[in-house]
Image (cartoon, rainbow, N blue to C red; front, side, top):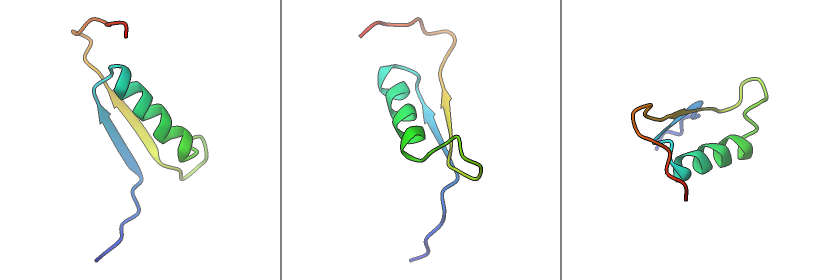
Length: 52
């Protein structure tokens, strides 16, 4: 089985779970360092914020 280095992750859905997931992945993989994993969060501007 081939192993590939993942360099980008896209989280689709900016609700509570989406934000927490993106933040945890970024924190765990030191996303501020050069060459680190890039995390992108995509959320809809048309869906209002729902407090959880």
